[in-house]
Length: 426
Ligand code: AMP
Image (tube, rainbow, N blue to C red; front, side, top):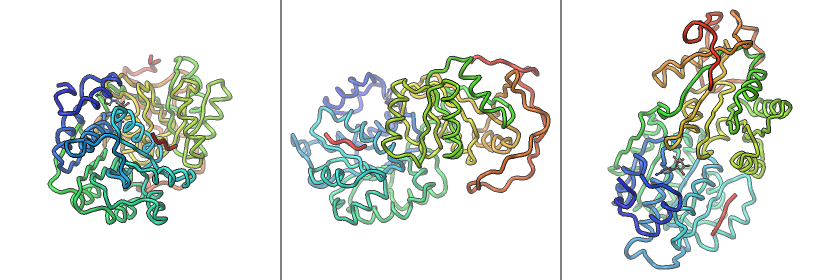
């Protein structure tokens, strides 16, 4: 199967070849022909599967097909609306539109909050074919009458599950109510929860279903390991791992914004170039940190779950869970940042006594138990140290005193192991 068999025009194929892609990923093979027929789509796929191109390529084709193929056409009103949960994802999707549409007369724009609205208004006025937006800022534009959604032909909900998790459902419904009834709807979600099912049943008409990668499992190419240790040794252990393993590009997950900042500072102090990204950082600071990380100027990027959504880095080799997430689904999202497009990746979780319930929930979700490793000098003590005060937890059930406290889980083989381990407009 090659891209040439999918029915895409030469300009699009040329852009795909420019990227160095020769074989469509499974979701691209299934979704592209379905979208080209004009049908609605419900796709279950996580980041890293090639899902962005799976909707971007056929959308570009549809906008320039047959009667629509007017050179230098720029719509006064947007023809495609892509909704994303975060600004990072909005920027990345719009970048993909520009990458794949570079040989076509198609204009695109990303609008999101946290930055000035006036440049976005000026760009909207100039005409945009494909508008990528986060729901809140799009509604600001609607309210100010700086965007007209009455000519939308195709609606895409990207990472719909995450938009629901972030409480965007009312905004999404408001936006949908402003769109023409006759349109094509494409919905992408990493999970297929009852809420997603409900949203899909109200929105999609006889959709084609595409389900790549079994849900809630990680890419086969990701090695997952747990290093057991004590909470108070985690910082030192992380620095030790950086020092002994020669890591060069590592995404580290922390649970809180404060924790992410503190960890980035600790790493910096021990000579590891680091930055933190989270919701309290300005858009400028986040974009800068991300591009420095991509360029290899930063060795470690410490992120919270929400800030990391949509981070798209080719060949990210390591993801470290400095702390486990409260929601087991977030673990799957986190490790989905590595092992992409068939590259090898390693996901390492530093787990202390009081995180064992979270670890159990994760193992239940992914239906496998993770290999435990102990690093010499950082072995977990038999009994947990008293827990420091914790910030309020998310919607997880309150936990008991931790059944497995003090229960030592030996490393595989019974003894400690060292394991080797902004918006743009064209
Ligand atoms: P996504 O799931 O859209 O976040 O894409 C994951 C990564 O895979 C991105 O870095 C894409 O550039 C890359 N990618 C997308 N399609 C292909 C393909 N057919 N072959 C190789 N890499 C791809």
